[in-house]
Length: 232
Image 1 (spheres, one colour):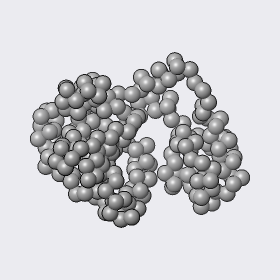
Image 2 (tube, helix red, strand yellow):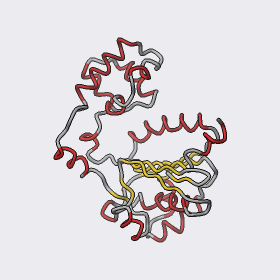
Image 3 (cartoon, one colour):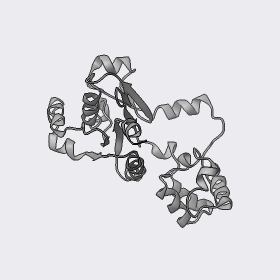
Protein backbone atom coordinates (compact mmCIF):
# COMPACT_ATOMS: atom_id res chain seq x y z
CA UNK A 1 0.00 0.00 0.00
CA UNK A 2 1.41 3.45 -0.81
CA UNK A 3 0.60 6.75 0.82
CA UNK A 4 1.16 10.36 -0.06
CA UNK A 5 -2.09 12.14 -0.52
CA UNK A 6 -3.10 8.54 -1.06
CA UNK A 7 -2.01 5.01 -0.45
CA UNK A 8 -1.22 2.19 -2.78
CA UNK A 9 -1.96 -1.25 -1.44
CA UNK A 10 -0.33 -4.32 -2.87
CA UNK A 11 -1.89 -7.63 -1.91
CA UNK A 12 0.05 -10.61 -3.16
CA UNK A 13 -1.53 -14.01 -3.68
CA UNK A 14 0.21 -17.28 -4.52
CA UNK A 15 -1.89 -20.36 -5.20
CA UNK A 16 0.87 -22.95 -5.53
CA UNK A 17 0.17 -25.53 -2.83
CA UNK A 18 -3.04 -23.57 -2.21
CA UNK A 19 -4.89 -26.61 -0.99
CA UNK A 20 -2.33 -26.92 1.81
CA UNK A 21 -2.92 -23.33 2.92
CA UNK A 22 -6.59 -22.63 2.28
CA UNK A 23 -9.65 -24.83 2.67
CA UNK A 24 -12.08 -23.76 -0.03
CA UNK A 25 -15.57 -22.92 1.17
CA UNK A 26 -17.30 -25.52 -1.01
CA UNK A 27 -15.74 -28.24 1.16
CA UNK A 28 -18.41 -27.37 3.73
CA UNK A 29 -20.75 -29.52 1.63
CA UNK A 30 -18.84 -32.53 2.96
CA UNK A 31 -19.74 -31.35 6.47
CA UNK A 32 -23.47 -31.20 5.74
CA UNK A 33 -23.81 -27.51 4.83
CA UNK A 34 -26.23 -27.01 1.94
CA UNK A 35 -25.13 -25.47 -1.32
CA UNK A 36 -27.52 -22.53 -1.01
CA UNK A 37 -25.93 -21.34 2.23
CA UNK A 38 -22.45 -21.73 0.73
CA UNK A 39 -23.57 -19.56 -2.20
CA UNK A 40 -24.69 -16.88 0.28
CA UNK A 41 -21.20 -16.89 1.80
CA UNK A 42 -19.58 -16.62 -1.62
CA UNK A 43 -21.86 -13.73 -2.58
CA UNK A 44 -20.54 -11.96 0.52
CA UNK A 45 -16.94 -12.46 -0.58
CA UNK A 46 -16.13 -15.52 1.58
CA UNK A 47 -14.49 -18.21 -0.55
CA UNK A 48 -12.42 -20.12 2.01
CA UNK A 49 -13.09 -21.65 5.39
CA UNK A 50 -10.03 -19.76 6.61
CA UNK A 51 -11.65 -16.49 5.57
CA UNK A 52 -14.90 -17.54 7.20
CA UNK A 53 -13.12 -17.95 10.53
CA UNK A 54 -11.99 -14.31 10.33
CA UNK A 55 -15.62 -13.15 10.61
CA UNK A 56 -17.53 -12.86 13.86
CA UNK A 57 -20.82 -14.67 14.19
CA UNK A 58 -22.48 -11.29 14.47
CA UNK A 59 -21.14 -10.33 11.03
CA UNK A 60 -22.21 -13.66 9.54
CA UNK A 61 -25.77 -13.36 10.82
CA UNK A 62 -25.88 -10.04 8.96
CA UNK A 63 -25.76 -11.99 5.67
CA UNK A 64 -29.27 -12.28 4.28
CA UNK A 65 -30.67 -15.75 4.84
CA UNK A 66 -28.15 -16.84 7.49
CA UNK A 67 -29.73 -16.82 10.93
CA UNK A 68 -28.00 -17.70 14.18
CA UNK A 69 -28.53 -21.47 14.21
CA UNK A 70 -27.28 -21.75 10.62
CA UNK A 71 -24.22 -19.66 11.41
CA UNK A 72 -23.42 -21.86 14.43
CA UNK A 73 -23.61 -24.97 12.24
CA UNK A 74 -21.47 -23.40 9.50
CA UNK A 75 -18.78 -22.27 11.97
CA UNK A 76 -18.71 -25.68 13.61
CA UNK A 77 -18.27 -27.32 10.21
CA UNK A 78 -15.48 -24.90 9.24
CA UNK A 79 -13.61 -25.58 12.47
CA UNK A 80 -13.41 -29.24 11.52
CA UNK A 81 -11.63 -28.30 8.30
CA UNK A 82 -9.38 -25.53 9.56
CA UNK A 83 -6.87 -25.91 12.34
CA UNK A 84 -7.56 -22.76 14.36
CA UNK A 85 -5.54 -23.83 17.37
CA UNK A 86 -1.82 -23.99 17.98
CA UNK A 87 0.53 -25.42 15.37
CA UNK A 88 4.18 -26.36 15.64
CA UNK A 89 7.02 -24.20 14.41
CA UNK A 90 7.79 -26.92 11.86
CA UNK A 91 4.27 -26.61 10.42
CA UNK A 92 4.68 -22.84 10.14
CA UNK A 93 8.03 -23.31 8.42
CA UNK A 94 6.37 -25.51 5.79
CA UNK A 95 3.74 -22.84 5.18
CA UNK A 96 6.45 -20.21 4.74
CA UNK A 97 7.96 -22.30 1.97
CA UNK A 98 4.87 -21.51 -0.12
CA UNK A 99 5.78 -17.81 -0.01
CA UNK A 100 7.67 -16.42 -2.98
CA UNK A 101 9.23 -12.98 -3.44
CA UNK A 102 8.53 -10.91 -6.53
CA UNK A 103 11.26 -8.63 -7.80
CA UNK A 104 10.68 -4.90 -7.80
CA UNK A 105 13.05 -4.48 -10.74
CA UNK A 106 15.81 -3.10 -8.53
CA UNK A 107 18.40 -5.29 -6.85
CA UNK A 108 18.87 -2.71 -4.10
CA UNK A 109 15.14 -2.61 -3.31
CA UNK A 110 14.88 -6.39 -3.44
CA UNK A 111 17.76 -6.72 -0.95
CA UNK A 112 16.15 -4.12 1.30
CA UNK A 113 12.96 -6.22 1.41
CA UNK A 114 14.73 -9.54 1.84
CA UNK A 115 14.27 -10.62 -1.77
CA UNK A 116 11.29 -8.62 -3.05
CA UNK A 117 7.54 -8.28 -2.43
CA UNK A 118 6.25 -11.30 -0.48
CA UNK A 119 3.23 -13.24 -1.65
CA UNK A 120 0.50 -14.14 0.86
CA UNK A 121 0.93 -10.74 2.49
CA UNK A 122 0.08 -7.05 2.29
CA UNK A 123 2.81 -4.57 1.42
CA UNK A 124 2.40 -0.86 2.11
CA UNK A 125 4.56 1.80 0.52
CA UNK A 126 4.26 5.48 1.28
CA UNK A 127 5.87 8.71 0.22
CA UNK A 128 5.34 12.22 -1.03
CA UNK A 129 3.76 13.17 -4.32
CA UNK A 130 5.89 12.07 -7.31
CA UNK A 131 8.11 9.82 -5.18
CA UNK A 132 7.57 6.86 -7.51
CA UNK A 133 4.76 4.89 -5.86
CA UNK A 134 2.68 4.47 -9.01
CA UNK A 135 5.80 3.70 -11.04
CA UNK A 136 6.51 0.89 -8.58
CA UNK A 137 2.98 -0.41 -9.16
CA UNK A 138 3.53 -0.40 -12.93
CA UNK A 139 6.84 -2.22 -12.50
CA UNK A 140 5.17 -4.93 -10.40
CA UNK A 141 2.45 -5.32 -13.05
CA UNK A 142 5.22 -6.66 -15.28
CA UNK A 143 7.61 -8.39 -12.87
CA UNK A 144 4.76 -10.36 -11.31
CA UNK A 145 4.29 -12.07 -14.68
CA UNK A 146 7.88 -13.29 -14.84
CA UNK A 147 8.54 -17.00 -14.22
CA UNK A 148 9.21 -17.88 -10.60
CA UNK A 149 12.82 -18.80 -11.36
CA UNK A 150 13.29 -15.20 -12.55
CA UNK A 151 11.88 -13.86 -9.27
CA UNK A 152 8.40 -13.33 -10.66
CA UNK A 153 5.00 -14.71 -9.70
CA UNK A 154 4.04 -16.32 -13.02
CA UNK A 155 0.50 -14.92 -12.81
CA UNK A 156 -1.99 -12.16 -13.53
CA UNK A 157 -2.51 -8.78 -11.86
CA UNK A 158 -5.67 -6.95 -10.73
CA UNK A 159 -5.36 -3.16 -10.52
CA UNK A 160 -7.89 -0.94 -8.75
CA UNK A 161 -7.30 2.64 -9.87
CA UNK A 162 -8.92 5.24 -7.62
CA UNK A 163 -7.09 8.32 -8.94
CA UNK A 164 -6.75 7.74 -12.68
CA UNK A 165 -3.04 6.96 -12.47
CA UNK A 166 -2.81 3.68 -14.40
CA UNK A 167 -1.11 4.16 -17.77
CA UNK A 168 -0.91 1.14 -20.10
CA UNK A 169 1.66 2.95 -22.24
CA UNK A 170 4.04 2.89 -19.28
CA UNK A 171 3.77 -0.89 -19.17
CA UNK A 172 5.17 -1.29 -22.70
CA UNK A 173 8.79 -0.16 -22.09
CA UNK A 174 8.93 -2.09 -18.80
CA UNK A 175 7.81 -5.26 -20.57
CA UNK A 176 10.38 -4.68 -23.32
CA UNK A 177 13.09 -4.27 -20.69
CA UNK A 178 12.37 -7.80 -19.50
CA UNK A 179 12.14 -9.14 -23.05
CA UNK A 180 8.40 -9.80 -22.73
CA UNK A 181 5.62 -9.31 -25.26
CA UNK A 182 3.93 -6.06 -24.22
CA UNK A 183 0.55 -7.09 -25.63
CA UNK A 184 0.52 -10.34 -23.69
CA UNK A 185 1.59 -8.51 -20.53
CA UNK A 186 -1.25 -6.00 -20.87
CA UNK A 187 -3.75 -8.81 -21.49
CA UNK A 188 -2.78 -10.27 -18.10
CA UNK A 189 -3.63 -7.05 -16.25
CA UNK A 190 -7.26 -6.31 -15.38
CA UNK A 191 -7.84 -2.71 -14.34
CA UNK A 192 -10.90 -0.96 -12.96
CA UNK A 193 -11.31 2.79 -12.48
CA UNK A 194 -13.43 3.44 -9.40
CA UNK A 195 -14.95 6.67 -8.08
CA UNK A 196 -16.60 5.76 -4.76
CA UNK A 197 -15.49 3.75 -1.75
CA UNK A 198 -18.70 1.69 -1.96
CA UNK A 199 -17.83 0.55 -5.48
CA UNK A 200 -14.24 -0.07 -4.37
CA UNK A 201 -15.52 -2.40 -1.64
CA UNK A 202 -17.90 -4.24 -3.98
CA UNK A 203 -15.18 -4.59 -6.59
CA UNK A 204 -12.91 -6.25 -4.04
CA UNK A 205 -15.63 -8.80 -3.27
CA UNK A 206 -15.90 -9.62 -6.95
CA UNK A 207 -12.14 -9.97 -7.28
CA UNK A 208 -12.11 -12.61 -4.55
CA UNK A 209 -14.10 -14.90 -6.82
CA UNK A 210 -11.98 -14.05 -9.86
CA UNK A 211 -8.76 -14.83 -8.00
CA UNK A 212 -9.95 -18.34 -7.24
CA UNK A 213 -10.90 -18.93 -10.86
CA UNK A 214 -7.78 -17.54 -12.53
CA UNK A 215 -4.06 -17.47 -11.62
CA UNK A 216 -3.86 -13.97 -10.13
CA UNK A 217 -0.76 -13.22 -8.05
CA UNK A 218 -1.06 -9.53 -7.23
CA UNK A 219 -3.74 -7.01 -6.33
CA UNK A 220 -2.80 -3.34 -6.49
CA UNK A 221 -4.98 -0.58 -5.04
CA UNK A 222 -3.71 2.89 -5.98
CA UNK A 223 -4.60 4.50 -3.72
CA UNK A 224 -6.45 2.55 -1.08
CA UNK A 225 -7.57 5.47 1.11
CA UNK A 226 -8.24 8.26 -1.42
CA UNK A 227 -11.97 7.62 -1.93
CA UNK A 228 -12.60 7.27 1.80
CA UNK A 229 -11.19 10.77 2.30
CA UNK A 230 -13.24 12.24 -0.53
CA UNK A 231 -16.61 10.53 -0.06
CA UNK A 232 -17.05 10.25 3.70
